[in-house]
Amino acid sequence: MNLPIYPTVTAGRYRDTEADLLHVIWDELTLANNPLVDDPITAESLKTRNAQFKQSTDKEDILAGIALQLQIKRLLGGAGTQRQWLNVKDSRFGAIGDGIADDTAAIQAAINFALASPKKWAIYFPYGVYKCSTVLTLPIHKANFVGDWAKLKFPDITTGNLLTVTGSGSGAPYQQTGTVLEGMLIEGGSKANITNGMYFDTPTESGTSHIRVTDCNVSGCGVGVSFGNNAYCIAFDNLDSWNNGIGIHMPPGTTNTGEGISLRNCVVHGNNIGIKQQNPNCLIQLIGSSVDYNEVTQIEITDGKIQVEAGNLEYRNLSTVPYKISGSGSYLYVNGSWCSSGQNLVYPPTIIQCDNGASATFNNVFMNNLGTSTRRLVGGNAAANVKVEGVRSYSPVTNNALILSDAANVLLDGGFTSASVIDHWRADSVGIGSRTDALHVTNSNLDLSPTYFHSGTQSLKWSKPFGGGSESRIAVMVPIKPGALLGLEYWIKKPGSSIGILYHTFNWGGGFYVDSAGLPSLKRIENFAAPDTTLSAAALDWTLITMPYPYRAPFWATHLYIEINGSGWGAGGESIYLDDFVVTPY
Image (cartoon, rainbow, N blue to C red):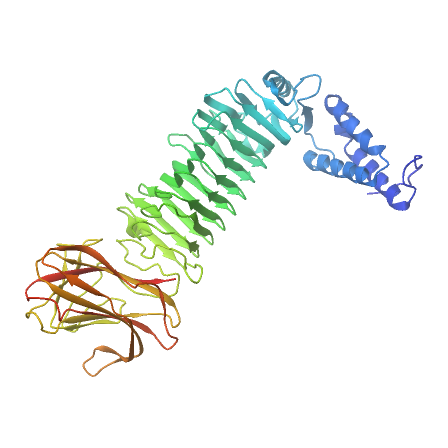
C-alpha cells in the first residue's frame, strides 16, 4: 500500500503522527472498498457509518472504523471482486429487523432483485431479528446471505423447510463455489414442529454443492439441518445446531447426496437426537466438533458412515443408549477424541448398540465416566464388530463400564490391568484360565455350562465330588499393575439345596513362577479381605461377590489372587456356577 502524505488534520483531531497514520490507513481502505461505498443500494447506511468514524476525535473510533473496513474488505474478498452487496434494510427493500414487524416481503424483494440481475449478490443482514411469516428459498447461484449475527425467526411455521438452499441445476457446480451462509441464525417455533431449519436441495444436477456455511446457528426446529437431492461437498464451519428434534439429519431416499459432508469446529447439542445418518452413500465427517448433551441419542446410524476426528462426544443422564449403529456397512469411527458422560443420575444399558452387520472403531479415545447398568460398553447382535483400541482415562478411572461386550469378552481397562472374563473359561486337568495366569483346582470338577449364566451364553460350573467337610477350592490369579487401586466382583449361583459356607479370600501375590508340576504359582501371598457366603437349603440366585471397597495393591504385588474355598459347603454332587469375574481399576 502506498501511504500518501495526509494533507490536513481537521481541527479537534489528534495532531500527532499516530492519529494521522490511522486516518491515512482509513482512507486507503475506503478507497480499496469503493465498489461497496459507491453502490447506491448500500451507500446510505455504510456512508453514514463511515462518516461517523471518519470525523471522530477518538482514536478508538478511528480504529473501529479501520476494523469495519477490514471486515468489509474480507467479505468482498478484496478489491476487484464481482460480488455486489444488497442491504435488506435499504429503503428499496425496507426490512426492519426488530423481531416484531414481518420482514418476509423485504427479504424476498432482495432475493428477487438478485434473481433478476445478471450479477451475483451478497444479501447483507445487519444485526437484528427478522421475523418471517413464510418460508424462504436462497438461490446460491445468484445470492448469498451474510449477517452480523442476524436472526431469521419463523415463529408461526409448523411444517416445511424454513430456509431452502438451492443451486442452479445447470450442471456447473463450480460456478457457485463459496460461502453461501455466514453469520446467520435460523430459529423455528418449536423442536416439536415438522420443520427443517436449513434444507439443502436442488432437483437436478448441479445442485446445492461445492459450498460453505460459516458461523451460523439453527434452533427450534424439527430438524436443524437436513439434505434433499444433489446436496454434496458442503462444509460447515462453526455451525451450532441446538434445541432441535434432530440436530443434523441425512435422510434416506435422496439422489446424488452425501459426498463430502463435513462439520469443522461445530457443536450439535441439546437436541433430542444429535446426528441421524440414514444415507448409505454418505460419510459425515466431524473434525474438532462436539456432539454433546443431546437428550435421547447422541448419534444414530441406520445406514451410512460417520467419522469423528479430534472431537468431543459427551452426554449426561441418559437411560437410553447414546450411540446406535445398525445395518450392514454402517460404521462409526472415532479417533483421537474424547468420549464421556458429564453426569450419571441414571445409566444407559450400554454406551454403544451395534446391530445387523454394523461396526464401529474407537481408536486412541479418552473414555471417562461411562458407567452402564449392565457394566458393558457395547451391546447388540453385532457387538463383536466393535473395536476399542488405545483407550485412555483418568487415573483413577472414574465409573467406566469395564467389559467391552458379552461378545468380545475383553476387559476395557484403560491400560491399567488385563484379565479375561465371561465365557472364555477353559477347563482341563491342570486348571482353567485365559489371560488369567491360572486357576488352581482341588477336589473340584470344572466345566463350561450353558445351563445357567449371568451374562453371555455360559458360566463356569463348579462341582464338589466328595461330601461335606472335604477340602474343595478353586483359585484365580489375575495380573495387575503394582500400586493400582482395584476393585473386584464376580457372581455365584446355587440352584440346588446344599447348605454350608463359601469362603472368599482376596490376596495380593508376587514372585510369579511355574512350579515343577507346570502350575503357575506365587512366592508371596498376603491376604487383605475374606468375605463369606452362607448357603441355605433354598436356591441362591445370582449373587454379587465384591470387595467391600477398593484396595490399593502393594508395589511388590504383580497379581490379585482370589481363592474360593468350598470345604464348608455341604454334601457332594451338587454344583455352584460362577460368572463375570471383573477386576476394576479406579
